[in-house]
Length: 416
Ligand code: UD1
Image 1 (tube, rainbow, N blue to C red):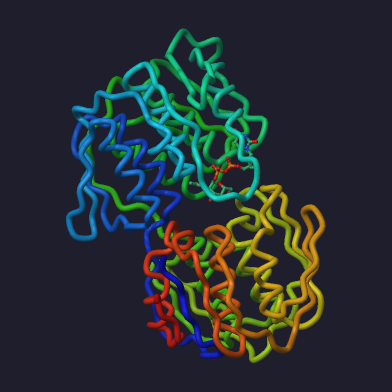
Image 2: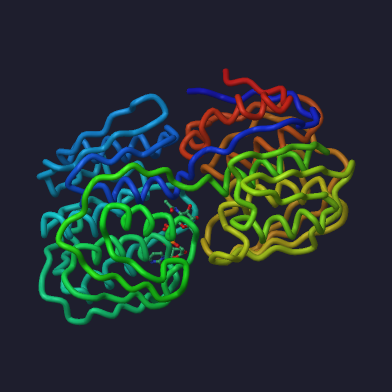
């Protein structure tokens, strides 16, 4: 299994282009289940999670093939509605197939999803919403058995602004005759992007990006060419990396308004940031100030997917910082690894207290999950000496050749 080997303390400088968003591509690939025709996804970054989703489409009878940087999907003859445990459990996004399979084939048997160990991650909101929309759902022996039926209501209220549930229900309703509404829907940019993709295929969706989405069902969806938005979490990770190494970087294909909450905190830490049209420039001071406190929240709040990285930053900033994790109940698994590098962090339930140190040191550490692994890479870049990070397969789920991009900016990092 691969490891990262980092020799820390190099300043990150230069320009680098951000990839296409993992969390946009995954639901879009599930949406392809409903499309009768060829979909070309331009610059569809080959994250391992994206490749796993392509395997799922193939198992369902669709075609998914790489053409250079693009992905060509054709689910015209998709005819299987069953997803085994083997295919569903490696990724969380396998649950996104439920709505589209019900919409296209009228029934589905899908094993429970997997994904990073950052909390319980129930799917009750997905299931209760589909039930309200008339689906008969039985959970048995690790599978969800579902069948389309007569809707009890066309207005669904989500008890929490769940990203995945909003996406699943929006997709299901795209082929449901008549008008459906999702209240208290999540507002993440990836939801707006999924709605844009489905609209390119002929769907009628209004209000994505607000807390009420209205979907008017159409008879069928047709193929299209589509390029998903850039990855705001990769962008945030690189901004933090530059900040932690006293660097100066320009990120291209980067949408600053998707990272407003982070940018505000980085400015508090003393970074100079210039937000351009599809690019962000950051210049960091020699020593970062504390950002004081951060609370994760649904968009446009501070993203939980950048919580481990901002904790890594606080570990070398001046003074004391507080980080509250409000979205997932078990997202501090990586902290034990940061302690091995000399960080001073305490946590209790959902609160992390970080006392910034002048220096932290390299160590042998283990990725615990995707974003926790990214936080270890950042600490490795900013610390004195050598760091070895194992289990980088977690990191590959959501960063494509992270080491090459960091090396392009001057980091001394290798995959071994
Ligand atoms: C998506 C992102 C993930 C990000 C998260 C929050 C993808 C592929 N993943 O995950 O990277 O960290 O949004 O921004 O897009 N919940 C329930 N019941 C449900 C659904 C969710 O209780 O049926 C809870 C979850 O346990 C969690 C919270 O709601 O505590 C947020 O989850 P949700 O927004 O659904 O996240 P995901 O779609 O899984």
